[in-house]
Image (tube, rainbow, N blue to C red; front, side, top):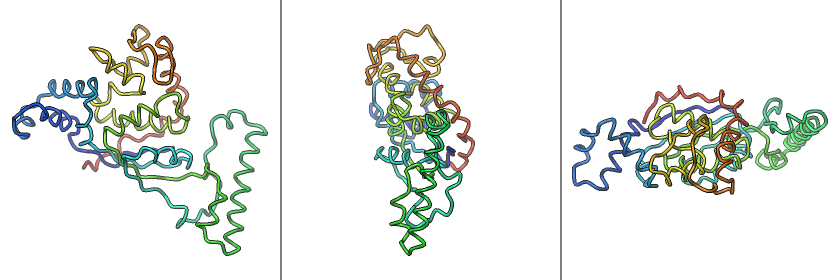
Length: 272
């Protein structure tokens, strides 16, 4: 998995803060923009998060290039419909070799032995059938039906911050499958590195709901590292009890930590 930030909205945090303020002030936008100080900006961002007033977040967008992921992942990803996608075509782009062009699930890799052998042989057999069908004159768009979902792909994704908020809530959760969960945590740390005040209170749905219930929101890093934090919500949307939420979130991260180094937060020079 490789995640690269291609572009993002310039002065995203300030834009969201000023847009939110516009809903309760008669001042001109330019006046609010010029008057907005750093402390006020942070307060507005925190308030939009804790009150669930996230429509201003839609003014901020991010574009990512996601590579070396399976079509299992992209089938899940495109269910987040308030986004734009451009994916490598299997209809017009013929797959010429399968070696190193498929994803091996963690459980199968860990099991090894016959399970891993059977998995790899199955993929290679499917690819052989794919090649034979093409050699028989079948168009690649029809031959591809025999290919497994493990085949790697790449996709360009654009999401606004509000949709990312929803994406993180669902996909950073331990209940999300490992591959898309790894993608979610990768993207989270990328956007947090450039817009820390916007994203520091964001995480899985349990954290988002917790922060809407508390007077003073807590940061994701606090939830991951501070054992003394006492949560308010009785259980998360997935039914995890209050006393187990911190461990659940930490496990969700630690389970996919090996994939985090693949993220590239430094390729965002082309800011929109």
